[in-house]
Length: 365
View 1 (cartoon, rainbow, N blue to C red):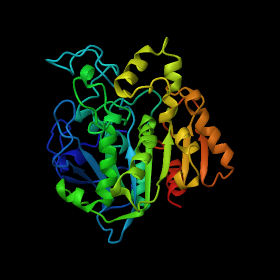
View 2 (cartoon, rainbow, N blue to C red):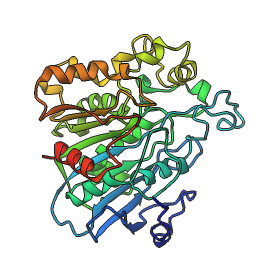
View 3 (cartoon, rainbow, N blue to C red):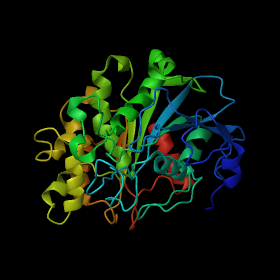
């Protein structure tokens, strides 16, 4: 897979340029059949600032020939976990990063989205392969997709204006807002006033009765945080609980707490992100398994698909045991399913077109 320079140049997109606004370029992913599919970049105004001061950006993939309301997938990318080991007030992003690179800036987040779209070669995380087949399957299936960029390294958990979702600002020296930006994607779909206030006009009409959350790698961490938030906020009234995908997502983070003697750096990162009293003692409280087990079917998404491998080089199997157990007890594999991708790999739904189409058809039957 090569970097598609003609695509980037056609829209004058530069990944180190903060001013994306609404540039539109053809979606020339080699797996896409549609000749009129496009990628549009949006920067809400006012924006959520990344730790480097750049505004957070999201991308929309749709077909500009659509004239009726369409289903929507919100796709959350992997790898959004990072912190500076010993930050200074003068330069809080300088120094040694947990991730080995700076994942706390807008450029990194945009590159990660381009990986998902199959338009950026980059260097994937261990075990990951991104050919862009998922994005192709969605748009060719008549499904619009929003791709928010997470520049906050917070496992999509933090929301700076909510005290129960604050990060440890005194240590990080910046605010994290992964969950905030994730929730903005829903508000953009269902809250006209919010969308207008942020200077946005979506290039398609959304069918709010058909919305799915697709978590790629630890992007799936947004799901157990976002679903309760959607149910609690007035702007989500009437919005059906979405279908969800977790592809290679560490659901129950308790494993990292229990094994902090060998996973100390990961544990230290969790302590920056999960700051409510008792969080680190009961990380399972932030799992999708706990969410599903804490109420009846009225709380459940209408469809759940969990994809993983017991030989995943990144993902301890123990982090998914409770969630897989819940799925097995439902005894309805057409609605609640767990699929083992097999092999020493991480993330399975963006490397093979047939698999991506199957995932699409499961979430949007």
